[in-house]
Image (tube, rainbow, N blue to C red; front, top):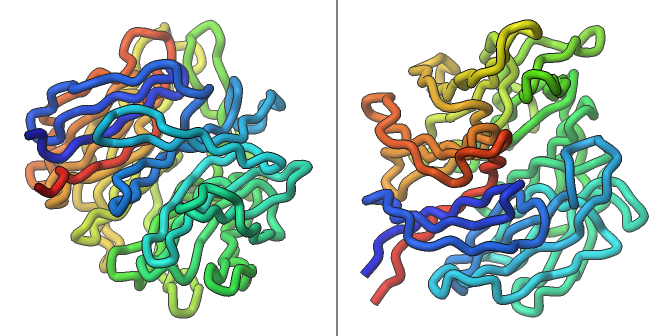
Length: 354
């Protein structure tokens, strides 16, 4: 019998890999997914995963056609069993599942269908509501453990939106100068953490990689913000040298935030390591910084919280980080080899109970 399984998708390979989360053996690969799979959420009761598809090609704000699907994956059969079309809404990026309300939430970009959070009934896989948000382009999203509130980041918009998920309405906004990237809530539901500001990047075609662009005037230094969920006020921060992009809070409360490192514009082509930072949530101090592959992004954890799995967007790999020794103990091949591997969304699937 297989134990816990790590699911890993390649945005540009349009594949979904299944790895044994303990032995790290690749168990299976599903090919031919709808274009550009992004983030993924696990529905433990049904043993399904919901995988959002954001763009047909390209990346954020490139003006290319947007996707409008969420794939439904049977995690035990390891196959796509349905594709939910959320039209007229488009560009779902983040996706969350709330078992208490039995609904799927996804944030969508501004378009003909509207903006904000789309709510889907998990049993019927149909849209039942939309929670409009004042800021455009709902991108990263986190829901509190009790399912009562959502915190939504909007890339360049200088706010974090706060939504009442039960009342299905916007509650307010939290200032986030320069915009924001990923956001997540602590397991105890007391705090939300957000990576800010939005990364200003430019594609260096000759190098085949990303460079840091000059940010708009007044953009703050890269930082991790800590938000008190009870008051929706920023109560702490930790500054970084380079852009912080994605983050996840571990089961024990430690915050793992990834940091993009960049080549100089005239340096020769070649890999540039990224960095995974582990932060103490109480003191907002750095516990460790671990070198990983290029452009570290989505992060998930083993069930015991002792291991972090970090998807490296550029390299097409997953760095397996021991959170006791703070060392990379293995590297998983999701789509290593292409110029841009595109490793992105992940989900940890607990072993099926007998």
